[in-house]
Image (tube, rainbow, N blue to C red; front, side, top):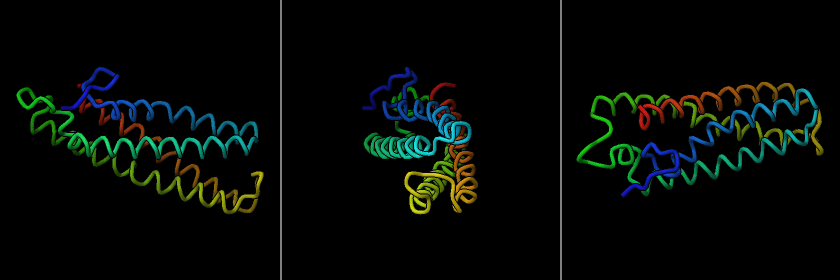
Length: 164
């Protein structure tokens, strides 16, 4: 039996937690960019990025365990077999949304990990602009766009799977 989460839409607790994280991650990311671009506080930017990455990694790992325990997202969406939330046509549509979301959800941690790994390896400690800055800025913006797209597509999936 799938327990309900805290948003009241019939999703599991971890689905609701990840959706909440998707909403919160973008403002924290924008603040992190603000700290480096406006305040030139490279140490705070580093701290925020590493903290955000660790928190999201833990959330995604917990989410994956939750999906396995509940038998996958379809079992959560249609937990009442006598009155399924989505019919076959709707499930097909939502599955396509999920696959589109996964393009970003899979590439984001790879890009972000590369960006962070190279920054930790190539920037001095304490962090400050260096020869790596140009590549880091490019990777950082690509990672940021990818993360925003992960958030947006994840929210669209959640909406069509649980709220519509």
